[in-house]
Length: 198
Image (cartoon, rainbow, N blue to C red; front, top):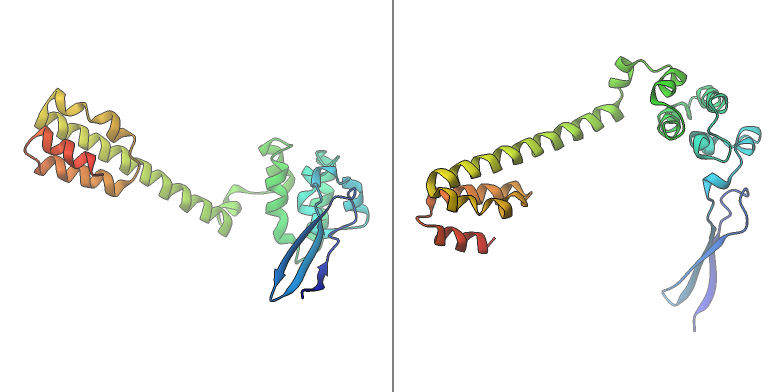
């Protein structure tokens, strides 16, 4: 017989209307239940966050109810900067601020110098991901262009009829396989068989 066990009941922050959610499951013959409350940040009044204070909500000030004002965002920034542990959340505040303010104004509010921003690990990671994605896109375009040239040289206009299907392929290894196949097959029929097996 399953015994009810109330593992945890959490009330995140008592700011929003009652919108409790229950999660119940059985674990090793025990009924496990967790109650939690969903808080829609855009329904939370920004004044509560600044007056109480609720430091965990400071980075979200721009998306709180009434938080789209420049002076309020500046106040939230000052509160974040005053706490050494929270000062690292300035970037999160800036991110959400760009939803409600112009990017140039956000940079001014944050007093960000782009040279300093470029040194941040977050910026470096985003930059690396962007560079990698750009390289992959460039390599794909080059590969498709090379395939098109190979098809035209080897098979003429008939070979170019494969290009619409090939252009839809994004996987670089598949494109390399196609290019190698074009160089090794002797006829369009052989190429059709190769393309059919991909």
